[in-house]
Image 1 (cartoon, one colour):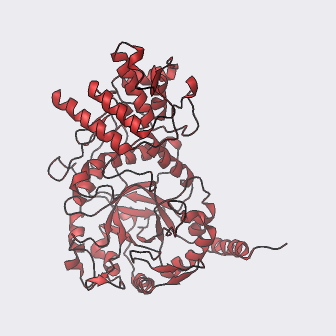
Image 2 (cartoon, rainbow, N blue to C red; image 1 turned 120 degrees about the vertical axis):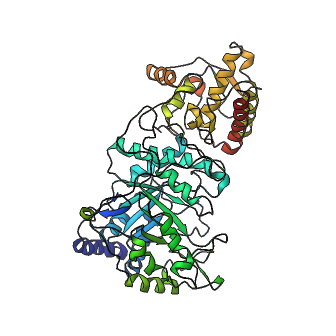
Length: 543
């Protein structure tokens, strides 16, 4: 029997390294530090690992579902001396056993973003909803079993500047619901954090916001703070408006690293660099010396920072790559790789033992609403697809199957000019959210169609909209009636418990073939919620 060389190599390689390494220890957070299960402090020495698309039809590549590439790159990971990779996107429908076990047996941990390019919390139009939670939950279900999964990013550089700090509430809600979901499923306590962008005014209030507050879920008391992050990351590459980034030539004092240590000296959760490695040398793009590495892992920084992740593995148009990916799918190392390798070989961070460490810092104060901060500490509702489906099924006036994005927006605009749309509106600046603000646009539309229809005494003419809506017999089970009674007709109530997101692309409404949840359309959220915010604002002012 002919055995493929790569398969044979992989089997032998896994056997050898599996024998050489004990089962990898999971990592946990305690105070502002990370620890192995044996109580020794853990420092991240990592690289951002996401392959370039190279004209692929998909909008991202999944590096953890490509055994050949994982085998190819592992050799260089070990040569470089890293212990962590950050992966920005995976497909939860793929199998990741081979790559994750390969890395596990070699002592490589994985930090993973839960979002993907087309399904994430958007800075300029933030939302936390059933579809986005569904994506997050699928990734969690797929990846939680691997002991070398170091943690999840619930958000990545969502707060870009002072104009969109209101988006923080949606990220914190995501953290809350991810942690709650894992607890409800009985998964191990996996770290959940946020990767912060750097801006003159937002890093410190952002950090405080994500770690502040004792209890975050209305009507439910949890031991500890379920909506606070387990770790925070700072981006530290190169931004024109930041003079303190470590771009050669510079020093610990002049780069701003000393200032960052002082800024976060009293922070209560682990913090590390999610991306570092400025490629500006003497004012222009050049080869990086990585002279900051000895400082990041020195005693003057390790009391506050837990290491960092170099940006990035593959050379791309932005010139941050450590290696070149050649046309034949092989790797050639760049001078940046060699320089980083030499720097990492010299580090020897002083690790403390959990038994000798007592956390001294408590949660920070939440930032006040002001010139540079606009996010309320009141968080969006917990996504519950069952509630959304119930709302659609309980509606006596519903939209047609083939309604377009523009038609949805037009009906929203008209109805919300006639009645209150608080049930589906959201405003994180003042902390007011309708219970149905987490639902799909089609379910939200059915909610306000029903409100409008009832407002006009259930006249058939109030449920037409040029043939885009029609009257049906509402259907409500006992469970649905209970959920709808809790939130109320105006959506002012709160559903507690773990988040729920099921049935996308599967469940159908039996009434005239109408889809109730997971309708295969993707309305323009920005347009729809722009309208919602406008009308909601008018209602608040008048009231």
